[in-house]
Amino acid sequence: MLHAFDKGVFETMKGIMGDERIEVPLNAKIKWAGSFYHYPLQFGDMVKGMNPFVLLRCCFGLLAYQAWYKIFPKETLNAEDALIQLYGRPLYQFFFRDFTHRYWGFPPTELSATFIKTKMPRLSAVDVMKKLLAKIGIKEKDGSAVDSALREETLHYSRKGAEAMPRLLAEAIRQLGCEVHTHARVCGLQVAGARVISVTYEDSRDGSRQTVPCSDVISTIPVRDLILAMGDAAPEPVRASASQLRSKAVAVYGLLVNKPQAINCLYIYYRDKEFHRVGEPKNAGLIVNPPDHTVLIVETTCEVGDAKWNGDPEAMEKIHTDLEAEGICRRDQIVQTHLLRTPHGYPVFSLGFEQHLDAVNEHIRSLENVLTTGRQGGFCYPNMHKAMRMGADAAEAVLGRA
Image (cartoon, rainbow, N blue to C red):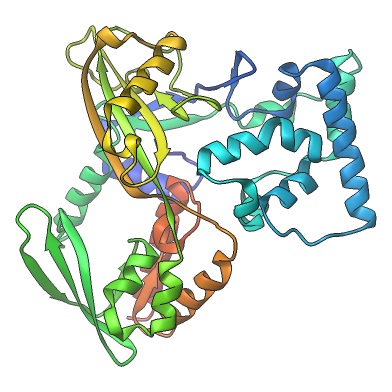
């Protein structure tokens, strides 16, 4: 779904989507300590799910660690160090350690501190103590404004689903006299000097190949694939660095369910299930046929070739068991299952990735007519409207030098 935070992007997409655009109030939840809370989860919600003794230990641990690192600063070597500096060891062990390991498939000690520093908010020890005091009845009169600010928002969608945005955008591009090639996998870039002079792509439907001459290239494919598509035109050390930039694969199970409604919100995040999020787009206005059925989007992280990636019976069994345990749907209510997957779901900020990304980006900057952008192209974590803004900025940069 599209946020409206970037007014330029939003107004452009609003005009392109026309009557297909519908407004949807944000209604997301997270399952935490046996209860449901609004998403994004706030610290005030976290403390509600904690045993009072655990809460005290976590709060005073946060105070102690923040004070210690203020007096004795220490370089963070990995995500574990960064999380402990942000939240203290007790809260890290209680809330973050196992979930982070489960999500990425490896322990936080193998994840770069850069990920935590760029993605996680810092908890002020003062704010934490205010939350603790509020729990025992000592509150500030205006203490709720910050917590609720990010929970109320209008999102933008289509009754035909998320496919409406790229479909309508492609139609608008064609109406401007441009070409859009779909089912196209980039398999080669031809480099002459400091310029890419053509791009070769393969049609995934019939395997045919076509080469397109170009004056400029804006790439949103994984930056690793961009470098490898250059072949020997990219120096061997750069190709070696590109091969070290990994992505976390995602497998999404789309389920047609014989049930009018399965959950009472847009989506729910889970911390300890086979899936990390379940969405019901019908609750956002998606038209589902038959009308007394619904659609569930069950999102999982995985590795290419594992059980969840392949949709093996053992993976399906675990997913069905968790769906039933959560009261979302029964096995016998699942009419159809569609598996969508990508090897490039999330860039992996593994230890030492920074030096490899720097080497790759330095080589790309040496090419006069190439820009790489977006989540995969930039090896970063923008949400959809920010990724669109990155694309617009790249286009404007090319137009500016035309």
